Image 1 (cartoon, rainbow, N blue to C red):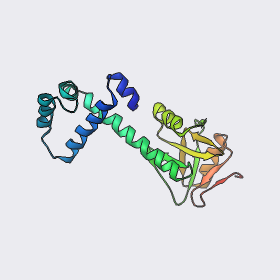
Image 2: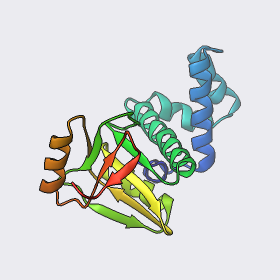
Image 3: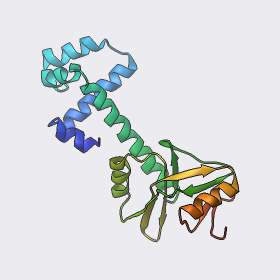
Image 4: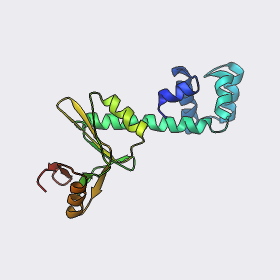
Length: 181
């Protein structure tokens, strides 16, 4: 769920979301007993007051917020990485990866999706729940291969590329695409 979907689902404002983030920061820091924090919210009607305090303790709500917060953080990491690496990024199992050797190939199930805007591409990545993909930026266009795999054996990478009807595979050692394989 995206942040905007979360806000809409719970009829929250940006201020509510910031208050939830503040609650999480205090919880992680261990500065205060969280039951005391909830009582302060209710007693003094601060940081969302009784409405937000009641929402926090309702089963499942806070876990949903934490999941949304984690996705928001991952989105920021992805954006920052792509912008600092000419749009290029490879993600395996939800984690940005770089290898010193081996080959990256789009699978037979992969789609190449083009975007005019990085935010639209990030929306697509998270809406579709993509965990293994590659991105690059060329001539004003953001490219996304929706399913990408790492191979440490060249022949297996070539076989996957042929099955997937790919024009190229990416060589991690040289950091270049191979078109003639």
